[in-house]
Length: 433
Image 1 (spheres, rainbow, N blue to C red):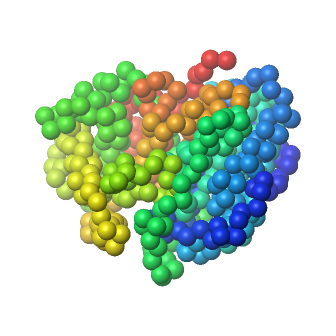
Image 2: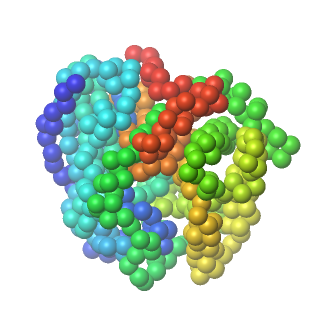
């Protein structure tokens, strides 16, 4: 399957950023975010629009949208701010000699990574914060691969950006406008680095040993799983809770079977604070507005791991966060509470963690640039181990899960009967033409 890059350019805002907006401060939560890019890819089937028309629409609308989302076109200034210098975003176009169906019938990270823009190896001050690769397939369909700096964004922010760009492409009368309030609510701190970041060589070495696998739970399987995961404490678990708990359960079972593994195992969930604070923040609030929910399995016996108990542990974590944050704070008081949430991970002893995050219910399938909604949206690759990403599947009510483990641990889930009873391992993506 041949893919050829046909053009590379920098897309700049259609009008200059005003002088008073030239410096965008990172919030404390942005400073805590890892220096990585978040990848996501959208697939669109063929339609009557020509390739030239689609290309023009994407580039012109992105340039227009960047005037409202000017930090994306800037460059990172250490862990302090973004220089909104209108340097632009990376934009490339590619041509594939095969149809879109070839990707959808057997999705894999190796193929999809070729549909993505190349990530800069270091998050330096000359590197773009938003990167795009548009790949045109021989059938007339296209993929839109996007990488956005995690220093500026969580899942909600990325959804806001994609939605705003798509509305600009459709020339919609109602267009999403990101709100840049974060640094005033979560003031940054003075020193340069919050957490020690891995070096370039450490990142490259870790990436060599990461293997990602895709599991799909259809709607009926999710319904059955929720029934099993229910308990008196949590009579109606959500599909995200049930699926996440199953992945956690299967991972723990696999780790316990390893003769050299005696550590406890926990999960870290990023929790969106926008609707939990008083007063609530708009969903369009730009930046990282998330704090980690950290839960371990210290209350889980060495015997059979009950799914309902894991769901109960996770639900308790959400309730605790709701109770902690659902009140009005003075700015300095809120900073202290958030700092305590981040330090929880250091108080969990030598526990192995798996980071779970959910894109379910975010409006990624509504990203219509003028040629219809995407036929599939997914995470194309993962560069770190022990990451679990949940997304809405094409099947309404279903859940798609990407799980990354080290190459030596991947077999744990591939051979887990409890997981494969409910999920299919990397099935084809079906859609109506």
